Image (cartoon, rainbow, N blue to C red; front, side, top):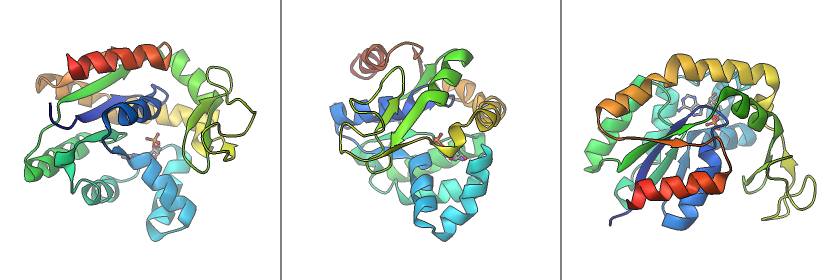
Length: 215
Ligand code: AMP
């Protein structure tokens, strides 16, 4: 089998980031997260970060031209495999992705749609913590670090994302429903969609994902 090429779909809190990291370490292909890239740009205070931060803090989607530009710059070696996490989020982005992949002469193996009930999404987002240094993801109840507030992997400090606050979470879930959920049908009609129950623990979800990849 060639390098794994996956697109991960799902609402905020469905576990795309956590699963992407698990898939990356098993299949050794790059994890491409537009959210991580945007947060990095905000942290560094670049022009891009300044433009994006207001949208992100409010829970809104960053405009398509900005995110498509970022993605294009990171898909130069797409034939070597990828795990796309958080892109595409609109139909426009899905079409841009198609163009980028066509140019590289590749197509995705599958689009994995992580499904979890709304109450699970909200519980996960409200307890999520992330490492400032290496980006590892924890949950204060479901997946606590060994030492409170400290990353098991690198010893970095854990923080709560600004957009994981309750009022912002509501806007993000609405943006998902209004702009991203239609991509499920888009990929289903292209026979790429694999839906996976992501409402339980990450190991169970990972087993389903491996099955979808390896058959
Ligand atoms: P995430 O880490 O994927 O939850 O993304 C965090 C935030 O970054 C989102 O709420 C958006 O504001 C922005 N963002 C990330 N990826 C995209 C995208 N593909 N399109 C638009 N906005 C995005």
